[in-house]
Picture (spheres, rainbow, N blue to C red):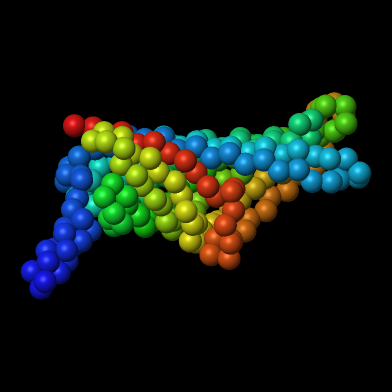
Length: 212
């Protein structure tokens, strides 16, 4: 019986410590998130849609850890009212831990910088104010990975642990002739955490491909 217990323990340790990846192995991937909501304004139901995508390139520096560089695009808009486009680059590090065969949990830290361009429209459909912003932020995220086979992995973000962000935004108000009538610039620091609850706005689905 002792030998049986020992064999079971060895098997469990082997499952937890077994790595499916190799040092120096490279990986490309994409991530997508989508979120839609509506709200009331002046007795009118307003729809808001946002989505984002990320393309990345990663390299394993250890069997269960890798560095990542990537490009980001985000969109948010309300029909006939406003829209915003964001572009960015990121650099991050992920440490994996085996949960079970083919299942991994990852703790990721990353830094990114982003440029955003937003327009607001009046009732005639013309732009009445616009803004250009820049931000830099640091994130800590918990991800879940499932290895489909030797080449493909599925991933999803579970919890956005913390985001530290500095942003600066320049606002411009236009008159009826599309000329600048007013402008100002705001800057701010913010710290946000996802520990207080789950939000679909933070949920991303991704696919990664392991290169030879």
